[in-house]
Image 1 (cartoon, protein in one colour):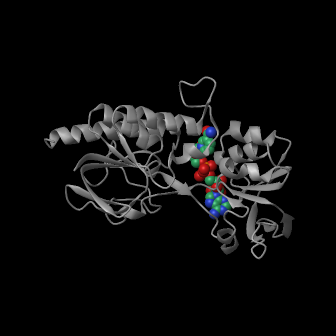
Image 2 (cartoon, rainbow, N blue to C red):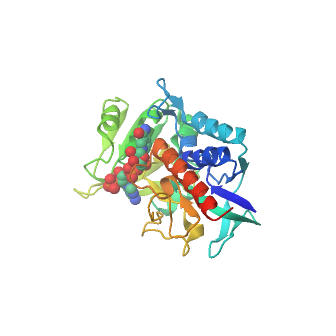
Image 3 (cartoon, rainbow, N blue to C red):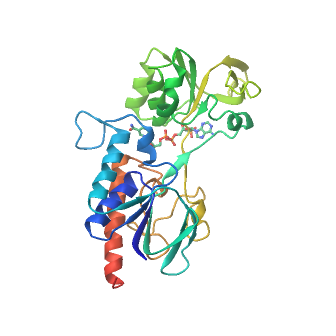
Length: 307
Ligand code: NAP
């Protein structure tokens, strides 16, 4: 029987682990398929307070894990594949084994969104990627496309411009969601070309098992054309990882957990932390803050329940 199981090992989960471990609750952290969360796929983090010279994302999140382990948190690789939250103690199936726990912190984050083209699915790992940091290296001197109009797309385009011979940033609208500073940085990068009001209709290369090109369409003029490309990077947002709790934890139409105040969900004893609930701020620092809040609520809950 566990006091608390934390599901997810990004900033939210790891911060919750530090706090609950320091409260002597011996948390179990289920790391998930994307260990370290979004930060493990990013490069320099310049806006996490305390690091005036910036810090590498993977190092920052690994340091959080080490910090939690120092106070007794136990990290388990793998994912929760089933959950029974209908009564306490809660039951979680972790890779085939059921574990009982008094409380749960859901810090499962959100995973990359894809366009949904059949060719895209078939070419994942063969030129189609959602992680510039992981795969950018393979496109040295090659033609790269980045899809999206948010901060991630700007960040990835800038990062990929270090490798590619050219980077084309394709966005479906005229206006950008990205912050001005990130947009300006990309716009001033001579290697990045912008194509707005542009839709990807098809990715070529399925029979060769390697991305060769794309068919694009201008949504305003209707003009359709082909463009050669080697690396196709998606940066079009994320989908919250709440599938396993469907029908139990209340979510909105997009699958984000609905907060019942603080870190509370609709189930007493089950708390949320980070991007799995937050569709607005989605920053490392806000996820860490949310992890802290969830941990403090777990402490209070366990005390009130007499555990
Ligand atoms: P986002 O802000 O949600 O932007 C997603 C972009 O993808 C939007 O421009 C959207 O277009 C486009 N898109 C969505 N679905 C699409 C589809 N099916 N086809 C084509 N385009 C599609 O996501 P994000 O850029 O990943 O950023 C998420 C959060 O993290 C934001 O709060 C951001 O500020 C933050 N972030 C911060 C940093 C940083 O500060 N270093 C870096 C990365 C991310 P529409 O605009 O038309 O909807």
